Each structure stands twice: as structure tokens, then as C-alpha cells.
Image (cartoon, rainbow, N blue to C red):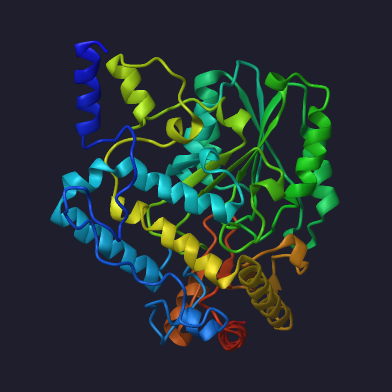
Length: 445
């Protein structure tokens, strides 16, 4: 081996940015220098995962309040808090040694995410948020001038702006289509038909959101994916329309993974319904689609750094190219593992069923209050944990303020032109609190 290559390999292996290979020094273990990287891990399973009271006891939420907005920026359950502190202590004690193994610690997070998503680790890139993931995907895809990108009027600012910026740079056209006129009366077949009617031969991306934070409508993603597969059947692979899903209000509350949904790309933060560390997220992509998503922010990966050093000239895999480099709040990123394990210990199906039951109870209760209109569909197939409503003659912002001040109910306002009162039924809310929320809204009406 040439002396220069040896020197370059030595430089890379010794860098605090990334290690080119080798086993991870786990958070619970020690490095090969004998320096403790973290204390022994605490359990990631609630004392009694079959008890919702035991699950809620893992959170440090104010017990005087009913938390229907805990998902907005997640509170951390005890195992996640403990993991963050272990990593923080390790980084404070010996940051260079811990960061030396950063790449392997990232691999552990991808492994946990892959088990939860029922996908492969090499299909997952790590990000800081849904917004970052949207920007990375829509700027990383090659959109030729005249390409058609289809999204909806219901999507959030982050999707609209990421697409606008990408189209501005590429010369593509972005179209927004309305999927329903009245969210409460949304229909799966009509939603799918409106998307199908808007698809053109030039359509390259269909950018949708799994659960609309504006109304609580949950899209029939599998049905849309099947329709799009038919539309793509006779297209060349480079000309097909990709189904890209913003999954932030589905991940952690719905039981389906990306393969069950049938999408090509799933983009989500992990700091909402999953109750993962704040400032964390991921992008999942089918292998052939991931190969088409170019790097936007330089990754700190072995392939890229070895290519830069001239040691190799190799293609970058998606899980590296899609994971932005730079020093992170690593104590948060690496504690994502515990968030996935915490949810799996309870059971994804149980969490989904629990959230649906509470959401149905809330919708039924609010529907019986005079002067209150429930915006979210009553059909659980078209809704998830979000429930939106409005009180006649009362602005949503004032309603949310009064709910908190006078009744101890923490709700939120939908951040859209049409503003509604928004509740989130999750693993930290109870049937009794749902009844309290209904009574509190009734007092406003």
C-alpha cells in the first residue's frame, strides 16, 4: 500500500468526525482505551407496559394539566431522558473518544428505526426534523425543467416552501390540488380520484402528508399508492411519479410502516408522536429511489471522506448521502434508539388502537355539544390522533387560551389560514381527560 494512502487512512481513522469501520463503543460500555462512555443503561420498558397508567408515569408532564398538545414538541419519557443524560455525561467526560465512534452510534439508531419501521437500516437517513428531511429530499431529487410536482392545498408550509424553492431552482412546476371540500365529509375514493385526475405524463413527484395537521384528515395512502403504481406501470423508471409522504403525524401513532403504506419516501421527525428526543428525524426511501436522492449537505461518512482524501472513488449509499454532516446534539440523536424501543415495548398496534379509541370518544363527545363543529372525519379510517373543531363565534386562539387558563386543558391552534382548535389524543391522555376536554369546550360554546 502506498505510504500516502496509509497516512490518509490513519488520518481518517483518527478523526473526531467519523470512524471508517469497527464496532461501536455502546453507550453502556467502555472504549478500547478503558474510558467509560456512559453509565449502565436504564430499562426502555415501562414498569408495566400493559398499563396505560404506568406508561403515563414515565413522563414528567405537569399532572395538573390535561396534555392534548404534548406531541407538538415532544415531552420525553424516562428512558429517553435517561439516555440523553448518559450520552451527555459521556460527551462531557471524554467528547473526543465518544465522537470518534459517532458513525457506529448512528448505525445503532438506524438499526432501531429499521426494526420499528419494518425496513432495512440502509434505507434510512438521519435528520434533525421533518422540515430538514423535506428540504433534503425535494432538493436532492433531480427535477428537469417542465417536470410536474403535485401536492395539495392542505399541506403545511414546510412542504409548500421546500417544493417552491426546489422548483425555483430546477424549473419544475408545482401544482396544489384540493382533496376535499369539507374535511368532516372527506371520502377515500374521492381523495384518490382527485389526485389521479391531476397526474400528468410530466408528473415526477406526488408530495402528500399522511395526517393533515390542518384538519386531522388521514389520507388513504395505501389506496393512493396502488393508484399511482397503475399510473406508473407503462412509464420508464426515470419518468415515474414518486409518492413522497410527510409522516410526522402518523409516525408513532399509526401502526403501518412505509412498506405497508406503499410510498417511495417517508419523511418524519421523531420528536412528536414517537416522543423521541427533540431535534431528531429521519428519511426512509426505497433503495432505487434513495439512489436518486443526491446529497445537499456534506455528510460525515467514511465513503465521502475517503473519496475526498483520494483513498477511494466509490458511490455513496443513501443512508450516508441523506444524513447531513456536522456536529450535532449527539446526546439527542443517539437517544432516538430508546424512543423506538419504548414504543415497541408497549406495542405499536396497542398505541394505535388506544389513540383511535380516545379520538373517537373525543369526536363523539364534541359532536354532541351545541355550537361546536367537529372538522375531523368521524371515520377512524380517515383520521388518527388529531381532532380539530371550532366553536361558533369564538376564535380558535382565544378558545385555546381559555381552555388552558380556566380548565387546565392544553390544546393548540392549527397554524393555517383556517384556524381550528386542535387536540391530540396520545399515550399521555386518558379517557377521563377526554371527558374533561369535552366539558371544557361545552363551557365555551
